Length: 362
Image (cartoon, rainbow, N blue to C red; front, side, top):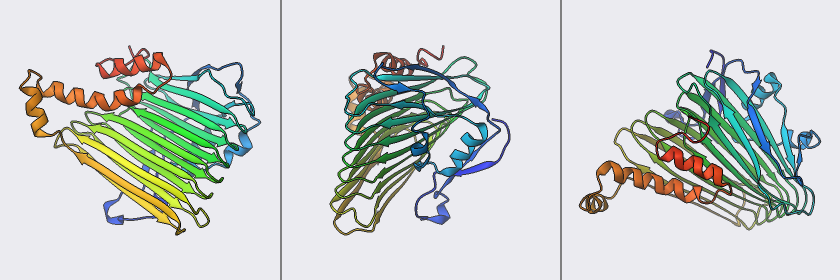
């Protein structure tokens, strides 16, 4: 990426452990003015490419912070908005395919606006084209506004080449009874920054986030996920499962923030990390902020290596150590991949796991 100013991102809501230097991250940015290639397959019942919902989307805060907004404003990147119709459950999946290319610096901005009592499923597939050996930058931001009792199922899959610096920024606002389910698979990219923030404003609104990653070589992943509970009886669940190999590194910040007045709310963070080498770096910051007494917040983490007894058992049956590692790594991604409502994207993920780079990276 061309030389430029650093943007502070992924800042914790409350600073902690200052001496460890994990409260925030810095994204080195260049001068980006180009929108990434977007191929959209949209059901007829979904309204596409309208700016009607943009004012509401602009007010939503995101996980990576307002520094990211500056990039989009300077580059004049517009929203590409999908808007559902009130009272309609859209059975067909909306598909957004973003193809990045080496030696390019691009941004994409997506808006998802769900009207009252509607339901929509969206699959975003980010992959790379040729020239993978060249340095590249790809940034994505998705803002979601869910009105009363709306439902969104959002899948985001990223399988870029290792020459890419990538960020994926998500902001969510939920009114009463609204629910957003977010599934993310992070497979590629050399340096990755991910952030998501859900403002559960309405009573009984909910956010569930399932994140899976597989990092090898010198890949780096920096994450910041925030569940902000404002309405009564709101619910959040952040689940992270990943594998680190070689010299890979990961930093996960997970915050559950119970605001005054959110009585009866529940929030949960779970993390499961498999370390396959002694040279990996794994860091986690769980944070629960509480301004209300009648709430329940939980955090659990399982971080470790393969069980030696299991490893010996499998090796004694003719499976080499390397094959065992690959099998265990794939199992975690396969579990999430099976939930993707798009056969082509599922096949692309399988190709990536088998040593290819999916149908866009040949």
